[in-house]
Length: 294
Image 1 (tube, rainbow, N blue to C red):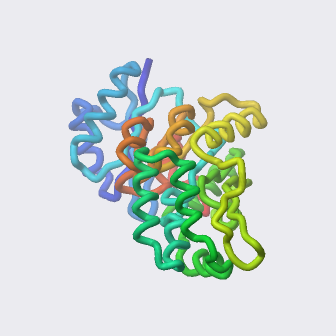
Image 2 (tube, rainbow, N blue to C red; image 1 turned 45 degrees about the horizontal axis):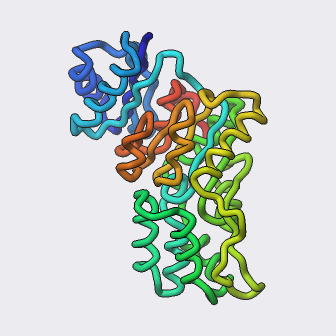
């Protein structure tokens, strides 16, 4: 078995090569994946098995340099399905926390969100608790929250548009709400989206969430459903997320990426993005910078 090691960093290519090669036994990179906006990517190929890959990934992660790396089977390449979380992954915010700010409850709601994303609380219970706190919030707050607070993370549109152009299906799946997933999906270019539903009475939120609630297992089910529709296996899926409710789909996919994630997620993912941006997910698949769109 051979391994692919991809390193991405916002630094000079020579420096990146020196830092990573030192960890790999002074092995020269096999391919330069190019640079874009100061972001540089290099690829190495080495003999090794899955156990060696895990050890190598841990060693590279512990070295303390601002470099994002993926250690993958050499046969691992471009994926045919992208499935991604929304809050704190494709966008830089937690929509529910931003809504809570309009109700004067951001600190309280954010504290629950943080514990849920770390896996310390049951996702469904944490969600219903937080939404109940927003009972009576006017519907105009949703538009304000989206238009004034929500922003795409760097590289999000490039990731989606580049994979779409290469024939991949792109799906945004969130434990958040369809009011936001529909808008974020359109802004980033996703083919489709799924999320939970906020119940309202026409003027304000009722404090209820539509059933069934989309959580950890529903995200995994979505992965399998969309993969089956495309006639592919889990190994041809790339999944991204940051919280505990993303873990099932991240672990099941051929390339599961933890994006600025909670420790419980980063520990289980195949690769992590901590220092660069979402374009690293393209480099990890073997795309070259000259192919990037969006």
